[in-house]
Length: 408
Image (cartoon, rainbow, N blue to C red):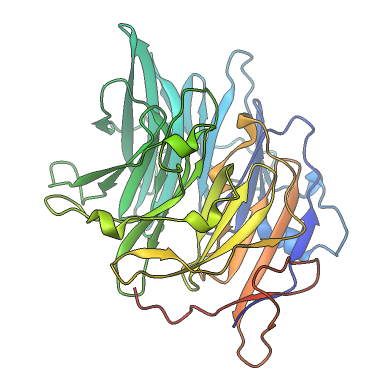
């Protein structure tokens, strides 16, 4: 049985104006930001704090403040030692430092006539990869594009940012969020109007052959707000196959649109294509209409999802006999305590929910500073045999059928 150890729940004291929280890809840092300030906290500081003890702002080792009155911080991404900030006016990259007296070194690039809509950062040995989504309104319609920056390390801070590779989106569609896969081999974008997910290969350099893939599921989004596809996660199975997991915030018209389900699709680049029978709706989540984030464990066959209410649930996964990955027959497990309600669009960030690289720990954080860690183990001898649908109470455990031996 797959066992959930006693969870860790902490409270980080954040600014009352904090709107967005997030967790770095490696789960070593937590970030909070509002329109003027970004603060970054080491996860280890929170885990070392005594139970019930608040982690104070004075313990935060890095902070960036936007001093220009007309500029507002809109997007933030971090990877390793680097922090990327997209304001309403420009893109900023700076190296995080713990010495408050020393000004951070920065690279800057103006957005020009474009508005930022998504930001992702990935650090590897000799290069920083940065993906920026942009949109602009022109001629009665929106235009959208995705920029890919390749920044060599060591970075000559103070010099101009290199010219990016540009990727256009279909007419009258715009990026809503961008990301880079955990292995740094793919980058992707979900769009706001057509609810598509576009995936590109990260090739060795400009001029190399590059494949792309667009996956579109039927969603009805006449309203403004966080409807349609709300998060995207790339998962690599033990067989080396890659899959896309997406959560959705279903509209009030969901039953006219095939349910607007969260789904899992194999990633297959043209000229090949994934057969429709291998793309599976995660219909076990039928009672969870308002999902805003999802994360897949690299070790256990578990998909974690976050609702706007703050509730976190776990869904078992298995190989489908017709191909692809689908959900098990067991109902989702919902744990308690949960994060605080995330009812406004300004508070929704897919990186609030992440598994660490080992796939054994789930991290979750809210804009109010509530921080939760759940540790997974596979313990056949001490597994809890209670119902899979039982709630997880503080300092207790529950279990799902073990799926650690994957066949997909």
